Length: 181
Ligand SMILES: Cc1cc2nc3c(=O)[nH]c(=O)nc-3n(C[C@H](O)[C@H](O)[C@H](O)COP(=O)(O)O)c2cc1C
Image: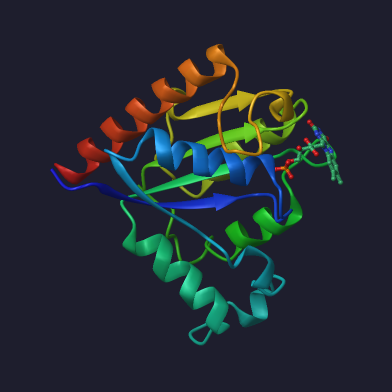
């Protein structure tokens, strides 16, 4: 079977982001299952404005929506900022509320942060309200993430590595189930 197309979003736009490194680690760990493309336009999306959420949205928004539509599954890795979801990531998701690209799309969410619980729960609520197909097995919180994922994009903590491998398997199965329907 050919590899599944996964569209990945890092909720951090920092150049040496742990979450970006985690996405790269997952791309390597799951290279037999997924072809992962990492979104590089998060910071270029305009601020969400319902007045511009019409038949002629900004070109950056159209490109983002197309990438979401064309993939088999969406993988988000994000930090928590100020006990919530980073504004740039929430902004991107707000652009999809009316156009519904997340609806019924297999979705995996990892919150990799210092703590992360509150931001994670908030984002799960958002993903559920936009009808993303996310399960308990395709979500994970990695606390003290900077001590567990290094700059060479390796997961150095054995327990975390095991949890990520379980999430990869669950995400792979979720995508297979949706594709076979
Ligand atoms: C503005 C700001 C707010 C933050 N707030 C939180 C927070 O509420 N909870 C938390 O766990 N970490 C918080 N952090 C720390 C991040 O978890 C940590 O910097 C993490 O490594 C960021 O992810 P990144 O490495 O992918 O950029 C905050 C960091 C910044 C820059």
